[in-house]
Image 1 (cartoon, rainbow, N blue to C red):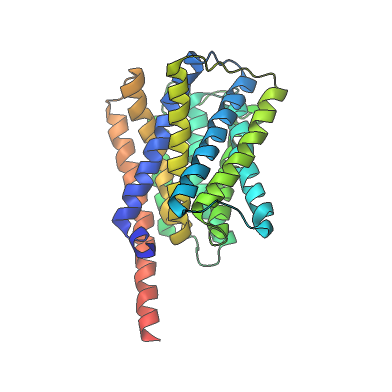
Image 2: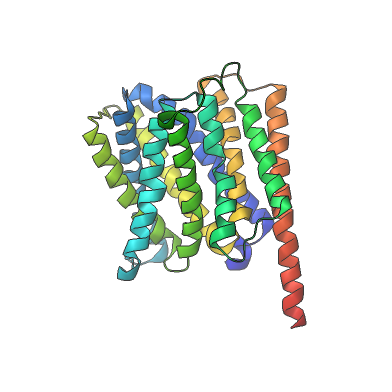
Length: 315
């Protein structure tokens, strides 16, 4: 299992699957707002809470079936998993929805997509074996350039910097980037399914309470809205479980850099599901930039792995 999950092709396929699923969440969220009559930040946070609570339940049930046991976290790990739930689920999404309500979609998307860069920088300081290199840095710059191209719209970057807007999205990005590294650090303490299930349940309960405190309302009273909510919960279950598994056996940078493809998938799937225009030169150029960034970061890690293998054989 470990060697298979360290295969570059397997990493690429699974990471892109995760990013495609997360990318599909963008148009699905827009559809969900319409079908469930969601208006205002409180209702958006409550919607996220319901989605992740259902995802946590699905992950728990699936984990029990796959591991043939009741998923129980060790008592000594409650603190770190609680911290993970607060950081990766609660803080991230509260900041995201508040920030998105006070900034443009273009600026929000670009700041949020820089979480891959934040993850790689955080790993440099938090994990001794994962140092920043010029290839990683250049790969991140290329990836971010691709995201900028996707969101390039007239007037999309005006308005300056506001704490409740760009500042909150930046806090969301930092929370996600740091939580990705922390997830890597704690991945040896529990199974990926156990970590994902409990951190999602903890974070979602806090989101639901926050949504209630902000007087949020969500109406899930049709089969379409129920099916959509179930799909969004399922995509989170699959994506977060696979992502945690990849981080367990691979360097943070090698996995996190694929996060730059999420906005690309978001744009493509929005075109398919919402009828938005997607075929233009800038999207092709964005895909080239993001692909170049992914290749650079992974070539860097592959070279390091080869040197480590040679060194271990010579000892």
